[in-house]
Length: 290
Image 1 (tube, rainbow, N blue to C red):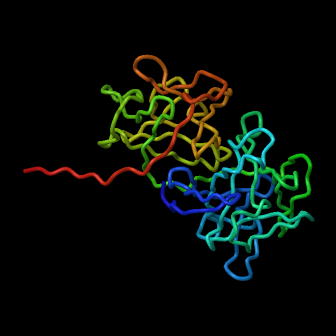
Image 2: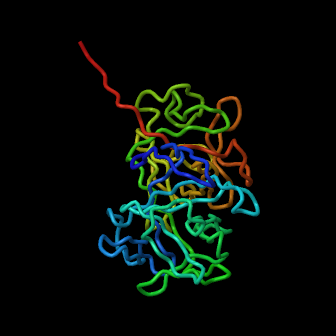
Image 3: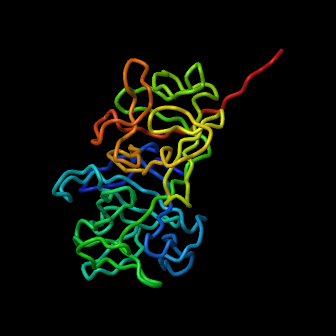
């Protein structure tokens, strides 16, 4: 996905690289205000007043590998880095800042949890302070013990228009079926337009996502490709370990490759490796005609 940088960070005295595929470039929309989390260019000021996704509203989501910070494992521990390469952080008094460039600061680590139900919104709990990141007027705060609407965020994934979809469990790529009416996840190499998909954000549908194919169809939760985007084509996006994602339909089922054809549809209401995917930039492709 675009906007990723492979860079080295130091956690607990151990250096490691954050691989490009493990980071996301996103915008975060506050559920209460419907405005974007923003890092202003001057003074390192932050607010949730952005009307649309532009440079100041872009954040790099980096997975944290510091297991000691979480009581229930490292799978949802992340940091948020602004377009100025500064980390969002919370101090011991609950003040939210974005003027530091030290990823070893424990105050920069948040735990992502996805709300129950169909909203798919995220809650970001600071792992040191134990409170949730929220927005109030022109300010950000981290003082809530429970996540209300002002502490919930919708995710705007800043991906390239067309990406390749790779199954973590099957280690194969998605592509259109020969009959162009289904998506199968059994390609070894993502080559050709049939492996290109658009993860289409639908702001008017509560910031859900639809999978749009190169033949101008939408994936329905039953595995069929349809002409128009209905509620059966809308999915909530969930963040999981190492930058993988899961897509949940309106009744709580997750997309996964099913059966010998590896048909992409929803079935299970729990997430295993079969329900996890990564988005990868498509390779430059060309055809030559003599």
